[in-house]
Length: 193
Image 1 (tube, rainbow, N blue to C red):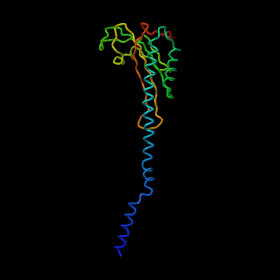
Image 2: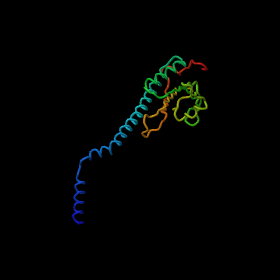
Image 3: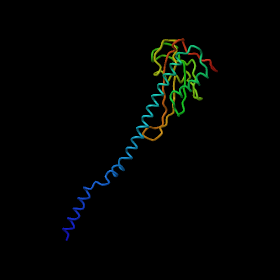
Image 4: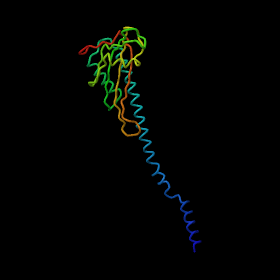
């Protein structure tokens, strides 16, 4: 009596193992969450790289605009520049810019040069550069002749991804150094200049 039951059990197990009904539903239930996560993660990573790319292009555009100025610029002009930056990046995140003109005042080799701030302005109430804080930028500012000035443009954008897909909230920061094109230096006609 045990023998027919074992054969029957074996036959039923073999039939069950060969039955493919419902396998598509099980496979879909297993793979669908992974596909959804991959789609969302791809969107978040693409958005982060797109935002950083737009941020960098906008920064170079603003630096080029500043380098072409021949008249002294004002606080209103610089606030408008921040508005242009927001427009170019099409961002929903908070931004600010800082513009500083820097002069090399002595022997201008990398080690012994002294950088001096002619003027600095930051939008959104952020801190301006001083002669003390600009020394931290010696490696970002290229060598230049004594008495020459450059424009240091810094752009900042807070970035927070829409979904948690491996990218933490961060700040995209760009530092662009450019020389004035048509004037010896960029002048500031704002308060405290």
